[in-house]
Figure 1 (cartoon, rainbow, N blue to C red):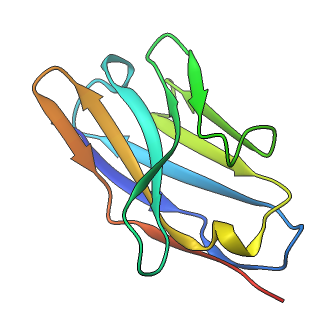
Figure 2 (figure 1 turned 180 degrees about the vertical axis):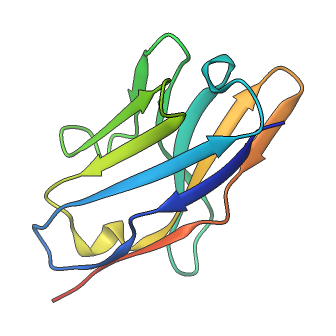
Length: 115
């Protein structure tokens, strides 16, 4: 099964940008639908964005027009470009890989939006 490692989190000021990466290994990356979820402090994990193995994307309303999910099936990596960041985007961001019979998660990367 696929293993996932996120990177790219950090501290950013409101209005700034970050790009998260999730590197996959151990299986055929293109077989998986990929996604990003996040867990704000004291709250439940929530969906941010998904991308199918065919490249169809879906976004939570709270991030539409600000975040972009993409994938590179050669580099076995999924990205989340985050622009116009807000304090309410502060969360641990998790990468997710899904196919029939499998639903896997990375360890998470912290994103903090604060002045």
